[in-house]
Image (cartoon, rainbow, N blue to C red; front, side, top):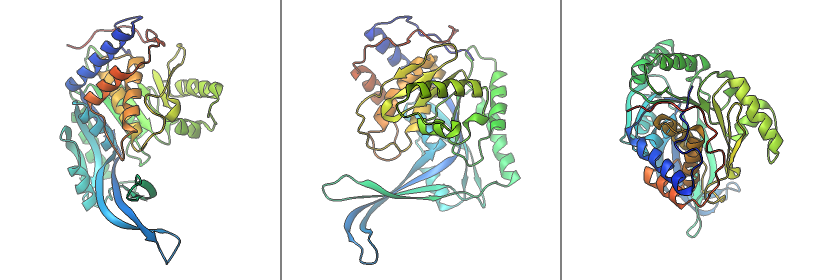
Length: 368
């Protein structure tokens, strides 16, 4: 797939910022299909009351409960928070958690393609957070309620029928695989072939976020694994070993045959790998003392995908995703980033490096 070259081959700081801001301005005109696992992220807040006499555990005085969309739902909310149109395809149950999850979405998320299945249990991740009067609330335990898989064939067929119509007029596709079995390599290949047949001046990028089986996917546009996921699928240890990171990134490119691999590294920033181009290391934006990393990967892929849909190069898209990731980890819970917040991050950044700004794919036409 061809991704646009930067407009300015070797821009200065002002030109770089103007270019990135222009890409963000284009977010609102894009339509993104998000397909994947829908998870209900439940947060239960309480204040520390005392230590229990029954066991050496804290007793919390209940304060409030909040439920927001996680997984593919969080990616969709991030797309909508940027002002773009998010078209969501996924599965929820007819249970109370499914109803609460559907009602929690951003108003810019189109949920008409979400299937509600009887007998399917909506996956819920319940996080209990405790804090005192003068202390920030911290997560003390998480309880996961997993869905039952595999789903009935009739449910799978109903979901498959939603994908074709949902692809119409979309500018990018985000695949969010949290391991439930809904998103598969075969399904990804079907989508890749479908978008390849579309008559468009600009190819439609297909991005993947897969937690456990990244190496099973082939030929998509790009993927955004975190370093821990890379270590797990390749069976290696990276840490601060630059050579190990380089070997891992190049191996992922060869094994997946993708146009780019963006590895998120937490406080170490990001590393962008492309065939026949040197690796670009992007330092973390903002403070390395993060507040909450919950759902940060969803924010990264949403930003990365939107930027590519507008016409950004892989490097420009990675820079924007890095800004968005730096902003969202300073928020508590499963959060989103707005276009204004992303623009503010761009204008406030004092990094004047010209790292690989022109090392992108060949130029191509822009959609009117």
